[in-house]
Image 1 (spheres, rainbow, N blue to C red):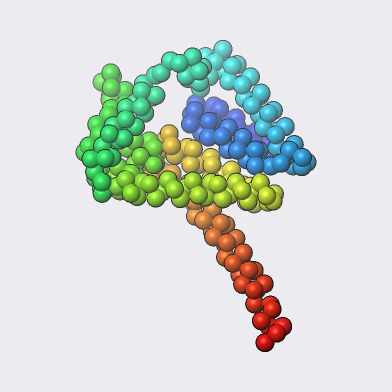
Image 2: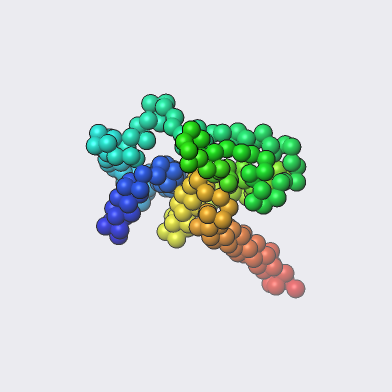
Length: 235
């Protein structure tokens, strides 16, 4: 298991993608924070997270010193220097945010470029038009309408809080994996890809809904049984 995790982290670092790296850090920290420090599992999770942060920082510093793309890009952001990728994302998000109030019912799926035109590598001859805002919340709000975007954001927030509370109250390995995956893929969807690209997020969203709603159904059934017991004893 440790070897698989190490291989996955190595591949993530060598890919040069910062979004998944930040999403992984967010998922690790939030998952660890849901575990109580007084428990053995909680202390172990915080220790593992701390070690990952230290090792990750050392590796990023080494990659930057060696001239690797990921290390240089992370250090560039840390020093406040924005490149073409970051500036393009900001322009896309600003354009989408400005257009959302103008289209209450949305512009239609896949029609983002009709209202927002931002080019990747705009200063180069091979500049390409960005087809989506690289933010799933803004994409849904602009293409399907601000009401759909608000409902989607509320659904994500509700699932996030519900799963976190369940994990905090009672440690469950399967639910912990679902929570970490949900946080990871949602974080990725905020900075990269479109509705179709982020299929793993939709899978974790469906599993999260199943877990939360299933637990509520079981709680309701248990309460109904407790209320029905006195009537059964004293007809």
